[in-house]
Image (cartoon, rainbow, N blue to C red; front, side):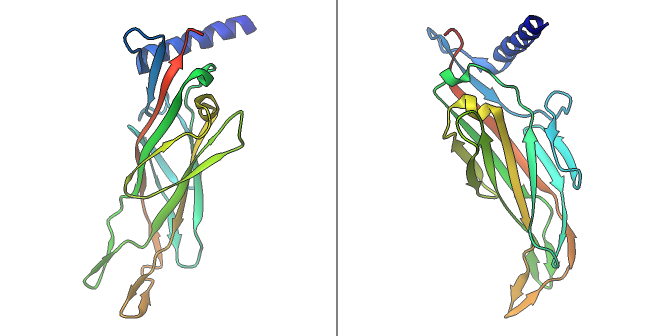
Length: 201
């Protein structure tokens, strides 16, 4: 039975290599490119049950509600990506993505203001370290190089996103209205690249 399972996962791996990797001419290594699909059957996510969550091609959206009486709240999202057992032979890996609030800002008098901000980290975990954590910047394209070998990074990758209330300060007066607000956060353009995977060693 164990041998049959190994054959099954081996077949899956080579199907993925065929679909998502390219081999440089005259080389015995591959470069892999992975991006999540909007199809939840093929690329499911682990997401908090407390918020509305949906997948989109290249990422996901979620809609938390927060207010002035509570502090920031952190949500964790984990893509269930495929694992390649011999990725330790790869040269290096990168992850890029963009996180932002897509809900239109409120109009307070003549001022437009988004009563909310986001911050967070992209974290990877594997064999050699507990977690490698990198802070990302909202509203721009973030690209990070994994600090551990790609095999370790392929074991677990998770997004930790914190939403915080952002009061409006105008003429020395803090405006907190509206007291409660629901926003939609979008994390898109997620692309993981692993370079120089040796599949023949």
